[in-house]
Amino acid sequence: MKQELHNHIYLCRHAVGTPLELARRGQKLGLEVIGISDHAALPDNRWPDIRMSYSELDLYDQLIEDAKKAVPAIRILKGFECEGLPEYFTYYKEELLEKRGFNYLIGSGHYIWLKNQWQSSFSCLNQPQALELYTEQLVGMIESGLFAFIAHPDLFGLCFESWNLRLETAAKAIAQASKAKGVPLEINGNGYWRNPVGGRAPFPWASFWEVVAQVGAPVVINSDAHSPDQLGQNKKQSLALAQNLGLTLWGVQELGLGKSLQAG
Image (cartoon, one colour):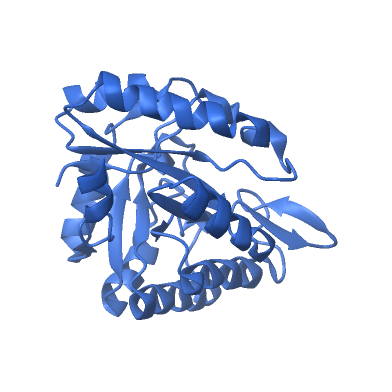
C-alpha cells in the first residue's frame, strides 16, 4: 500500500504546511493513506519551541477533520510523534488514544536526561552513557505497547562518524525488542536532507539496518516531511536500502491500522 505516516505541519514551529496541503500533495503522488503526525502537544508544554501548545490540540483535530472532508479520495489518519518519556504514557493513552481517538502514535527519542539536564539526541549521543540511555528509552517505548512504530532509531548517526561495538550493541538491543514486540523501526528519509557525517547521510545508516535485517525486525518507511514538497522525495533511496538488505516492510494492515482506515 502506498502510504506516508510521518509528516509535520506548521504547528510544530519548524515545519510549514497544513494537513490539507499534505493531503493534496499525497493525492498527486498517488498515495492511498497519509498520516498527519506532528510533534505531540504535552500537558505541561515542555519544549515549546518544537511543538504545538496543549491549547492547540483542538485546532489540530479540526485541521485534520477539515482535510478529510476536502480530500476524500485519500485516507487521512490522525497521529502524533511522541517523546518516549514514561511520565507522559498515561496522557498518551488516556487523552490522545482513548479520549481524542488518535489513530496511532509514533515513538521518538529526541531527548535524554544526561548530566542533570535534558539534552538533544541530535548532538549528545557520543557522550559517555548517552547512547545506552537512548537505547533504554527506545526499548521502553517499544515495550510500552503505545506506539505504532519507532521513528529514526538510528538517529545516533548524527553523532558518530564510524560504526563501532557500542553502536552494534545498541542496534541489536533495539532490533531485538522490535522483533519481540512486533513494533517496526522506521527508515526515515529526512536524514538524506542533512549534512553528511563521515561521508554518508547521518541516517538512515546502512550499518544499523544490516543489524535489523540480521535480527529480522519489521520496518516501515516514511519521509518525515516538514513541508508538503518533501513528501515522498527520498522514498526511492529508502526503499532501495530496504530491498537491498531484504528487510521486512510493514503497511497499515500489519501496523493494525486497518480498522482505523475502515472507520475513516
